Image (tube, rainbow, N blue to C red; front, top):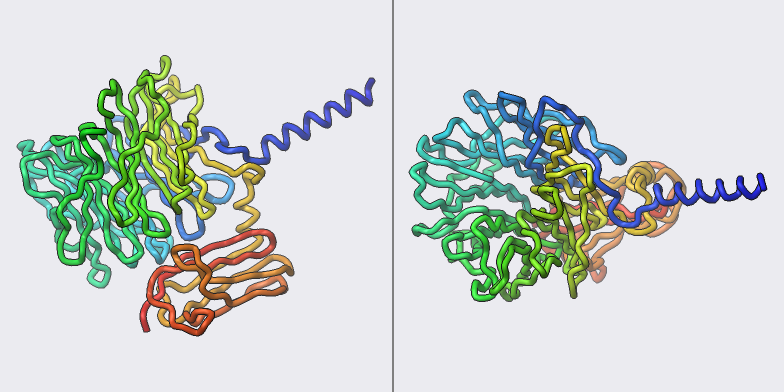
Length: 500
């Protein structure tokens, strides 16, 4: 009997260990920030650096004091302690609605809106290069009679762009504006108006920048229940194109559309809308592969409209790997819940709840994909009898280890000079003698060159890609990926190839 009990106990321990160690999807709600009853944390954003590690940026409001920005970086198995993004600019009591992105040199860019008083605000920015955040730079043309809100930053093709919406404080309808960073001069170009100068409300904007440096912007025209889309053709912003057909789905006034672009340059949009004849709000999705926007498809599964969906975010790296996260109001006695769903190229999965029952007001989710295409979602949550905090949930493929990213970082490393002119120089290392493959892929995932394919000893190594195809042809300038496979792991790094 004792032997049987001991055997059963061993089986139970092994079962619990396997359940805890191996991912079977979402790992559950966990905290990003350290709990602090004197600080209310909220409105997070998330982005992934070139090492595949997410960074989270959020607002931190001290009781009866100002609002600052804090950030934390994922360290392989835990978040580092949150730290401030520099001091507030003189006379700025609040820094709100942050956005975060990484450029091709792995420099982090943050933007936010500065609230000076009840009568004026403008857009601030900073970049993290080396080991600290740089001084604040003002993005927009400062006007003491204007409000400017909810900026968004994105990088691609060697360009950094920012969009926001705003207008005079007399409540004249708002417009969408954009600016581009002028790197050699160290300042933002004069702002450009993206939306047409009419009497309707253009707001809640978002952007993505493709591999050529072209910005793609979406926003809500609440007066016409439209999600609008435009891009900069190098000389001007094209006339707005409708994403949704309002006869089928109308955008809500605060539709808050979000846009993502995958590795092949396909655009994806999610937004809050109301279908014709429906009694509640849902999250909708559309895509554009260059031939126009597809009809809007509902992401959410609440066909009975027992609840209302509010704010959503979207991330994609290929057509069969699209993720949307959103918050839902009115489920049970709780205020808001956080959900996510996945698109596999043909249909949307059943939605999955990401938060747990310990919080009663969770919302404003943001989502990004790591280098393995797996989503990380962060959100603001208010736990019972506590202050606001920042939470996250991440998705692990079945059979993967939570500590797999730690093991990978310790086992193999890969780096590349970027931008590269004429040739790309890679450095990589392994902790054991093993079979090593180092190749280059284009944005569509096609292998176009390789440098290493054989057994190498443990240690540091280097290789040079001469930007030639396997048939000897010259590779055009653009964005490419280096891919290292060694010791059972795969590491990728993105780089930009310039013309000679």
